[in-house]
Image 1 (tube, helix red, strand yellow):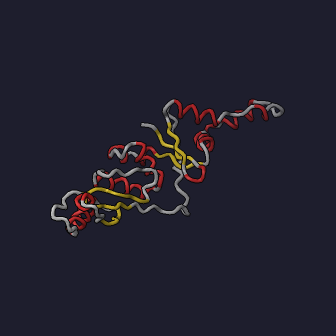
Image 2 (cartoon, helix red, strand yellow):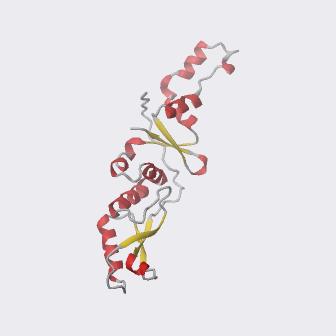
Image 3 (tube, one colour):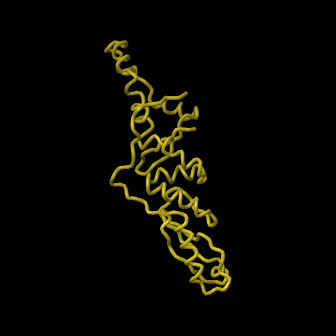
Length: 195
């Protein structure tokens, strides 16, 4: 069931703190020798810039065979879990998406294990941030005329007892696989179209 609407997505409140994803890249040779040698790097950069940071970190090692590296820590990636051996391309793509779109992108990236094809689908799939799935359903059906039809067809003394089940509508779309709902900060929800 495809329920398209022409409303623009609700995006994060302007007061929401901007995430600044970064990773701590460390030399594995140093780690194996019992030392930590590495540095925090801005992750929302081109992969070639991350590669240059890796080269700089490895070049600064006191270990003669410092050629391998890992991501030992990360910060401000929201729900996305960065793996120790994730590629720089993947980390960069997720981080840049988070900077551009906020924490909903981090959740989307985690839902899809950082798959580059799915990361590219975010703009097409992100419906928006809502107080509840019911609020989204009301917005989707706003121009449908359902409320006016109920007012026209149901006698005034019965109107208080007859109403459209927006909760059920949203729930059925989720159970039917049309939308995916994730919990957002502050008790809100993020809605995504399922492709």
